[in-house]
Image (cartoon, rainbow, N blue to C red):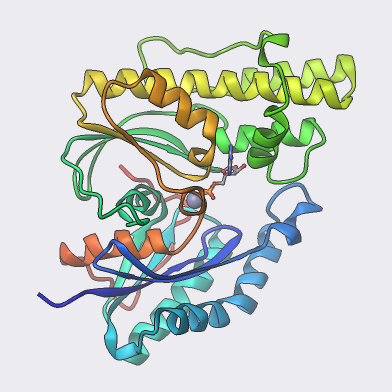
Length: 335
Ligand code: KG4
Ligand code: ZN
C-alpha cells in the first residue's frame, strides 16, 4: 500500500501550526508559530488577539510546512484539522483554512479531537524507530485545559477513568507561576525555577480524593497564595516554593496514573499534553511504574500539528471523513 501523507492543521489555542506526516508516524515537516510573546504581557491567552494572530500566520505556516516537507498537493491523501476543544475563534481559523484547502484540492477532510491528537504524539517517530503499542494503554493527558486519566482500549476507543474537578494541571502551573511573579507560561518557568529549589522547605497539601481517579489542584493553589502573601516573593523563596508546588502536583499525578495502570492491566503508560514535557513528572512516573512509560519529546508534548496529522492518519484509516458543513466544538470531549 502506498504511503499516506497527511497535512495537519492546529489552531485551538495560541500556537498556529501545520505539519506533514507520513503514515501517521514519520514527520516530514512540523511548523509551529507561537504567540507566547503576544500573550505574555496579559499573563495568559487573550482570545481575540489569538484568533487575529492565527489569521495572520496560518497561510505562511501551511506554506512552510508544505515546502519543508518537499510535498506537492498531489502527494497528500487528506487534510486533518483540530475541531475542538479550544477557543472558538481560534478553532474557526484552522477549520476554515482546512476546508478551503481540502475543497480546492479535492482532498478528504478529517476532523481531529485536540486531546486525542496529544495522545497520538506518542506514535510519532523521533529517531528511535517507529513505536507500536499493544492495548490497553493507560493514558495521562495533562495540558493547559485538561487533566484526564483514560484507558485506551484500541484506536479511537477510550474509557474515561477520572479527571480534574477544578483546575487543569497546566492551568494550576500557569496560575501559580503568576503568583510567584514568573513569566507566562508558568509550567516551563516553574520547572526552571524549581531546579534550584528545595521542595522540602514547604509542606503543601495534596488532594488525594481517595477511591477515585479524580484530581483537584485548587486547594494547593490557595496554599501557595497564602504563603506568598505571608512572605512576599524573594528569589530563594520562589525557587523553594516552585519546587514544593511542582512536587505536590507530580506526586498526585504519578501515584494515580500508576495505580490506574495496575488496576486496568495496561501494557504501558503514555503521557501526553504540555505538562508531560516536565522532567519531574516523567521521573516520578518512571520511578513508580511497573510497565514501560512513554512520552513524546518536549516539542511534541506542547501544541503542534504533527500530532494532529498522526491522529488524522488513524481516523483516515478508520474511514472517518468530515462533511463540508463541519463546525468547531469548543467543548469537545474525548469520551
Ligand atoms: O498541551 P498544551 O501546549 O496546550 C493545551 O492544550 O492546553 O499545554 C500547555 C500547558 C500550559 O499550561 C503550560 O504551562 C504547561 O502546559 N507546560 C508545562 C511545561 N511545559 C508546558 N507544565 C509543567 N512543566 C513544563 N515543563
Ligand atoms: Zn494542547
